[in-house]
Amino acid sequence: MVTRTEEEEVNRLENQVENGGGGAWEYLCLVHKLKLRRSDLVLKHGLSILNDSKKRSALGPEEWTLYEQVAVAAMDCQSLDVAKDCIKVLQKKFPGSKRVGRLEAMLLEARGLWSEAENAYSSLLEENPFDQVVHKRRAAMAKAQGNTSAAIDWLNKYLDLFMADHEAWRELAEIYVSLQMYKQSAFCYEELILSQPTVPLYHLAYADVLYTLGGLENLQMAKKYYASTIDLTGGKSTRALFGICLCTSAIAQLSKGRSKEDKESSELQSLSAMALEKDYKQRAPSNLSVLSSTLRSLKI
Image 1: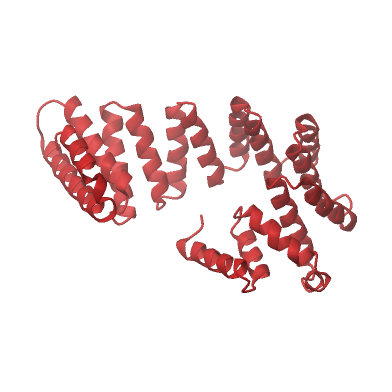
Image 2: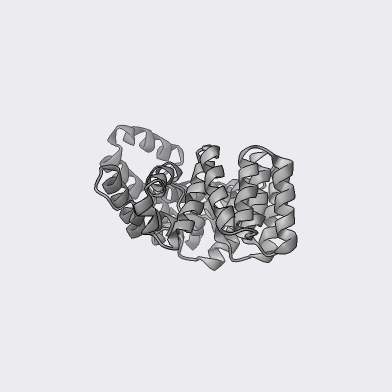
């Protein structure tokens, strides 16, 4: 996951390059290192280097990495002729390369030649069953064709082999949510929280899923994960603060009688409501009346 410092550095370099301040190669290297998809800018500035023989030759072996980076960006931007030209250069330099073979299959995919791309990916996996990129491309290709069930199957097979891939777990979780398969999505977020317990986004998404599932036990658990999101973000998650209010209100309706836990929940709800109102006063004062009305409807 990209840190705030890294994101600020990317944006700084991006502004510098876009305003003619130089540093295109440094920018492209950072985008590649952080695995970002700034495809239009990668294509623009990558081509400006590749089309300049002096700049290109100065790259040394990194020239071939740039050809690959530009080829992928060109496919993202549907500049398929540019992608084809880049791949041809790489084919000539590295004949029989499996890495270049992946790019060829991706180009078939970008052209909508699904069966040809599937055959190409299958062939690559026969030679290397543990090729992560190819496994993920098959899942992405199924999703692109609207075949969600196949995308789920491919992602599950992929995660059987590569359980530590957080991006794949998140992708699978989001697909399950889109299909209202909340229990399956909850399992994915549990895996993410176990492997990356300090990422507030996972706590928040898990809490949302638990709240959607409903029931006293799920609501109580959702409240805990909304609270952990608030803790991890230093109280700056508006969505988690509102989630606390929603959960506490729903729990009060489902639970019978009053208890110490009920009192603590009420205090947490009040604190969350106060934090929300303070946040709205600072950032969206015009919506404060709507928030206050909503909180009153929750009997806060």
